Image (cartoon, one colour):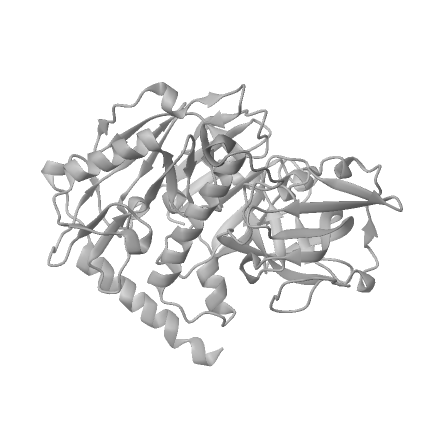
Length: 470
């Protein structure tokens, strides 16, 4: 551990230097502004390193675990020599791939008549957590994704498995492991299943033909945050013995979707059926807290209702009514963000697994025009980073960009500079809008969610937002 102590100190010093160099002063010509890299004074603080543990009454119980971004996890595992800029560019590329995959699901006409079985592209998760299964416990790092329901890990005996750091789950070493019968209710919740010798078998195939196959099983799950452990028996998960892909090198995947197989749904008997997270900024070394249960409620939260899309019930849809840039509303018809309930197309999804926000093309074009109008710095080609709008801020002592507000039904989601623009090059002179365009639907990505407490209250069918210093 001692040989790694210099890296955090160095990064903190670099972060301070960046703060000094690029702190933003308001410019009257741009309307309202947020300071780039500024840490505001927030009424509610959520510390990534602080854990909360409350057991007992499910209505009051809560438990907090830590999330790590992929780049953080790779560095801690010693498997990455990438620069921050390279890691970010790869995350942007995964966002484009993920949106293309979502498009197959939500707007299949855009790519013909291709069909697939899963809402997640393999390896596209951007955050990981530690999941512990079995008696005695076996621990694994898994991708966390709000756009998926099935929880699964690679299992022994493994017929075909991808390479992962550390051992795979060994059911023979656990006294609490049992396979699910074909008659179990959660077997019927699988999108694609089979039955062999009364054992429920699952298959998830992803858009790039990566897949996981195996037996649906029940096991004791344990969540440990350093301050305590919460164990829950009879947790349904996929015990994958045939798995093709990379899946970010993680042992498997945890779903936080709305379906009955998701982790949060299965924990709802132990904790209140709600969860929250507070994602730290890209330049932070801290973990991001993920809380299950009633502690995932706080003051100063604005809520918007979860919109039902009967054709895609896993995803978290919200009603986005309009967008403001620099205090000025964009000229967008309400139909731009509407869901066609007859086809399931359109709408706006809150998603943790997409790095940059992807707006439906009419809205995205309007956003680009607004920033091109407001920001007068020289333009740069951002294609090398997978981004469309970049500016050269070399020699600019106080660069400034307008803020943006997503006007949801009943809630305003306000984004400051660090939620909108990213310095993408090592010289810190190329400032790019961290957004892209999509066909027919919109996704609110995790950069835009950073330094916000985001609450998923599935009991009340609503999602809340509060600005926070995560």
